[in-house]
Image (cartoon, rainbow, N blue to C red; front, side, top):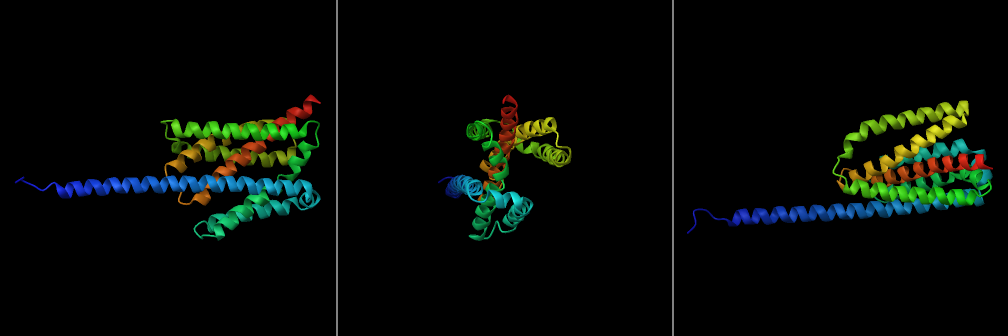
Length: 235
């Protein structure tokens, strides 16, 4: 007879293994939900942008500030309702739809340029390619990107302040600089948020999805501005 019974240890090992498996399955489900909601958000924004350009261009232009305020109100509302099933999805898709509407002015301006449709397509394809590359980088790198959070946040504040200043200055050169920095910043944000998602650092797939959506949206707008500015100079 053995000096001690190994069954409890075996049972504990089996329990621990089952716990890890269940944890991994929960994370996989979380990531799957996140990207499904992200895809749905892109679709809602696309519908919003299409409606804005085709039917509500004048309304959006006239009440643009109101639409922007509504957009931010929905975003804040989304974070307050992230734990309320049903309502959080309604807020997510309402926010992304309205954010698509607020793209109407810049899309209309670029589409009004010679070759404008090609510029929009290039910006979207570049955004998609960068999103894919940075996502793969986030999954494969051994570097902990979470340590970059404070630096990224400070850089974001600088970009926002610079954008507000340029609203009054109207400097094309400063706009190019801001758009270039923003493109780099949100490319890094894609990797940062992707790694945080796969490591289970988000408490809701809704907030995880909106983080990815905002990264994608801001990168797209930055590239659209750059391509639009340089495209107009070539004419």
